[in-house]
Image (cartoon, rainbow, N blue to C red; front, side, top):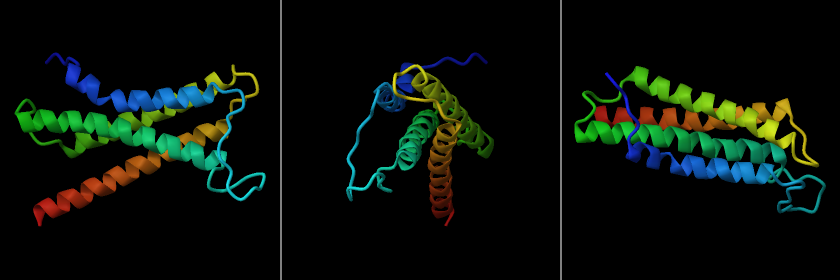
Length: 151
């Protein structure tokens, strides 16, 4: 069976692409500045570690949501023979995780070319943590929704 990407599927990924563009823009800044609360050298709320986890959690959620919504809409319209299987759910999650990892690596490589910025393996690990956090929340929400449907 030949699989083709439909325009609707591509449109559903636009939020993830837009967010990836925001991440790229911020990474392209020589000295990104952000708000600091408390006046210290480093505030926990806006530390770079928290920001990395947060921005990639959003990316992970948008990636998963775009693919999942596309499949759900196909199932509802009758173009997908059965409900989304557990195996397919795992593939969606794995694809979002892999893309998040690859984008995190490419983001750090990009930062290494920007004056005043450096690439860091720890930042990639924080990016992966953010994606994993979002996907964990997505899995938990699906489990809750499926259990309520059966109850």
